[in-house]
Length: 385
Image 1 (cartoon, rainbow, N blue to C red):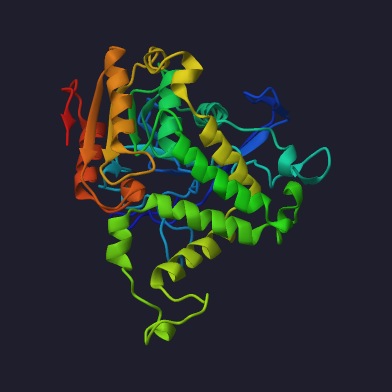
Image 2 (image 1 turned 180 degrees about the vertical axis):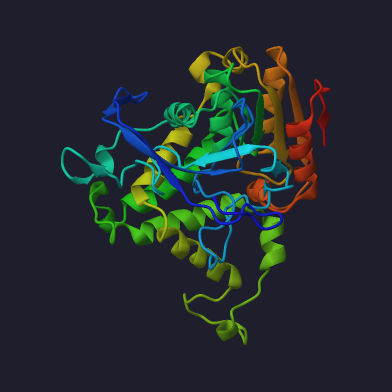
């Protein structure tokens, strides 16, 4: 990592961790080994206990802060939160983020080469779960010499990973911060994922998962992204940003064609086009199915039983306009932790930005995160709205 400018971690270089032993998935399938691509910011202290793990959401990756080159137009996806003097302060903490197992941004996934066939795994890749992602991350922590995690932080799918970290490795995790997440994928979220998967699999170019890196179901993946992106926003935020404004060529009246007319259409098409240039369709299928399978209460008998091993101090944050994982789903996590006798707090932030509120600029969120990470006393359980 190169020197940082004020407030930024500066230029960062991704690294690869390769595990060269057999890895068994929850499904019973195995890989002869795997690679996780990751980035780190800040320095690990002498006692190896100032590390914070950032867990990404479905469409995220390992690049959550800084830039790869001076010419990069965009910083990492959580650059507003992570850096010197920011809520996750890299002057104090050693921050780690890895692309999840099953992903397509340098970590082993369906687009990786199967050493047996010398071809991409495609749908021969083992079915991956959130549980598998976390176990692979633990091997990375061991490789980096991390003895304990000061905190695990994640939003959406990242929140699911963070909860499992506290369950599977209770003595390793001191703080758990989960945002805009859920303890079980509900029917509506599963339904949205299925529509996206069908858009991909009904695209003839999917070819049952067997396609070249340059080809594949680009139309289907773009449609899947467009549909999913709507669930990350809110009616109010979309109306404020786009309203019924029309593109210049359609602004002079109603055009009775199916050509693009409204600015919101242009925005969604842009989201779809940019997504297909960085994401693999088979990874999208695998990761959305991992989300569907996530149900802590079913896996452990009850949500309280799931949280029984947890030792971490926990903060759960919900957002009022999140209709993908609504506030009550986040609140239920904190309530179950309290019923299990754990140290838990819940905060609900009033926003109209939808599910993606946890990624956007918010001084209120920054204050919550900073206070949670830096306090040294036992918390007062606080259900604030």
